[in-house]
Length: 188
Image (cartoon, rainbow, N blue to C red; front, side):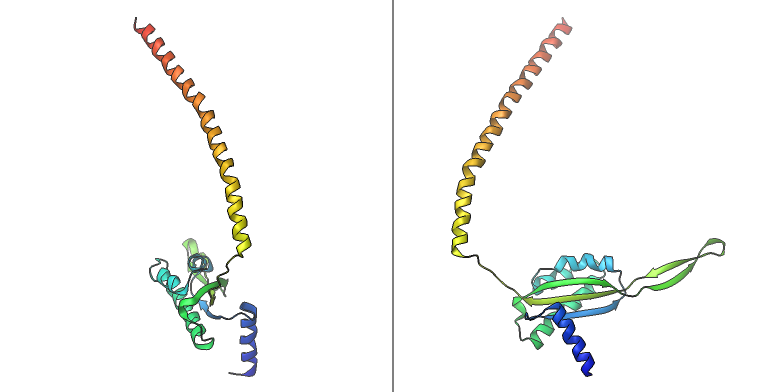
């Protein structure tokens, strides 16, 4: 590997991860349309690596096999280069860029030809260790106070809603009684 290639790789890592621990993997020139690959990538973004691999293993889309390999490769890179535990890794970023389009032609009626675009994708997956942030104790107390204040307001609103519904039921009962009276008049 040349010095320029090393600099390019480190620049790519810098753009994806910055100073944070983690690793990434890229699959380039994959013969699947970016739209179809994005559907699969959206399934695993934010999941733990093991959960993501389990989801991809049973996903019906054709791109799931390729995304599975990329996620697995990114996890292996994190284990090998960063010495991170696979159980703590989460899919931090996952995106699909459009690659070059192969242009082909298909013969059609009356000597015409139509263009067929065979699209390619670049799939990038970034894994990072799971970060769990606990809110400070003061914030927890404030949340419980807010919940206690909101509870009576909800109860009052619920009582008001039931009070509004009660007269409506009586009105429908009167209409049915009136209909019965008109039906009896017609019979006699």
